[in-house]
Amino acid sequence: MIDLAKKYEDYGVEALIYTDIGRDGMLDGINVEATLRLAQAIKTPLIASGGLHNLDDVKRVQSTLEPEGVIGVIAGRALYEGKLDFKQAHAAVTPPPREA
Image (cartoon, rainbow, N blue to C red; front, side, top):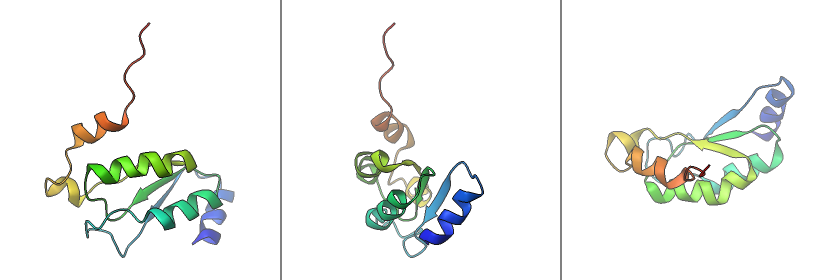
């Protein structure tokens, strides 16, 4: 996985999506450990995918993975099944506007 990511990194891609296919659609939570290993091994920004369950997962990605180069997370089934409210998730990870 890391070798393949580095190969695409050499091609100049802007970002990579890492999907843990064993968790995709299962609502078991993002595979933080594997995503972290990949993010630390490459310089290209990474988008996490597979298993997102709820707002706690979004916050965990932001606090644990964002500092390591993960720039986003894909939410599918969690949204469809009402486990995650998009507006609430967006508000939780978006800093308040700066005052002029």
